[in-house]
Amino acid sequence: MGFPGTWMTESQSVVYRVVPKCACSTIGQIMYYSDHGEYFDGDIHDATTGLHKWAHDDSKESISSVVHGHDSFAFTCVRNPYTRILSSFFDKICGIQRNGKRYRGNMVPMLIQKYGIEVGGEDGKQEFDQIQSFRRFLLFARDTIRWRRPMDPDIHWSASSGHVSTFIVNGGRYDKIFWTEQFNEGMQSVLDQIEVPNPVDLAAVPRFNESEGHGPKRAHPVEDYFDDLSMHLVYEMYKRDFDLFKYDFENPGNKLPIGEIDLDEIHAKLGD
Image 1 (tube, one colour):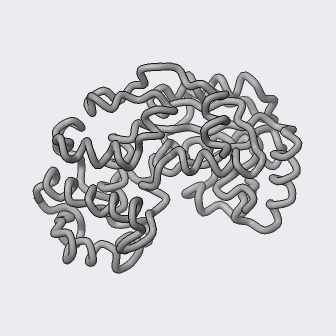
Image 2: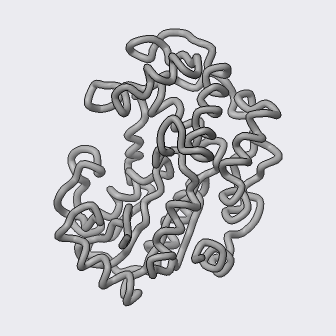
């Protein structure tokens, strides 16, 4: 199995387990800059050099050695399940991707046909009932996670705890897990623990939000998208995320955590 979704600087200063929709573009660019003194020109997910990635065969041995030996500081970043699934909907379902096409080819037409969702027309820019469509998408997301039908769950809406756990199960240990909602504070705590060739000034880092502009703007407050049934579906999918990462299930409008992350608890419960 190894360490899917794991990135490491070429200098081996730090190891990061990517969790989709949790500031991964910005984190990857910070790691790239810390080694090279410049940002990658383009989407960091497309970078094939300058950063070790598990997806690259020539990086696997280096990553495995460092993680198993715990020779570098290892971290990840998580996000409120309510805002994460909303972001996935607007970016991946309603949005046109950077290749100019719909995400995953025929998935969106299938969703329109089977679940009755709307996505804002061909270009994703027309008016539509965002709340109704999002709630129908939630049913689809739940079906993929619970029954793996009509397809396996996508990495962008499968539970964060599932991504986080593979690193632990396969022999890694996190030194830090922080929240997207307190990004600068969390990322600074990582940078304070490592030595990098090029110091990073977080206040000067651009926001590399690759999904921005892909799809329609969210027209309502977060809490408006979640009625009682929607909250039930979200809890069914993301109970472990709420529990382990200390987010507020009762109030979709509160994106901030309500407790402290306990790394020992996470390693114990996700290391099975």
